[in-house]
Every structure is written in C-alpha cells, then in structure tokens.
Length: 80
Image (cartoon, rainbow, N blue to C red):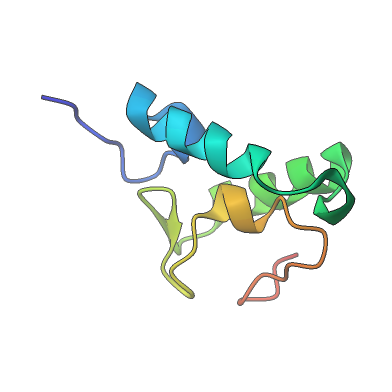
C-alpha cells in the first residue's frame, strides 16, 4: 500500500505519480515554460501554502507542479 503525504508534491510521491508528472511536463513546449528560477520560486511558495494538499492546489484544483511550469500561469491566491 502506498501512503501519500498530503503536503508533498507529485515529484515527492510514488513512482507512478512521478512518471505522470514527467510525461506532462515533457508535453509543455519549452517556449511556454517558466525559467528554472521562476519555477523554483513558485514551487517554494506553493509548498508553504496552506492550500497545498496531495500535490493539488485546493484554491483552483490544479497540480501545482504543472501550473507553476507554465510561463503565463498565475497563482489563484496571488502568491506568485
């Protein structure tokens, strides 16, 4: 049985979730991606947010690791 931490991001969870994340990230064209520094800052803000539950933003329902990767994405709570 896989136990999933409610405060962890997908990349920190079970292998099948990590594989899904990698496939989804790869599908986003490079021109549509945020820089590594912007992505890291966004992820840091999401990890500190009380709306992060099981890699999902409870404010909008997205997987934060995918939303944060898109250059034109915005946080629904205006944290980034």
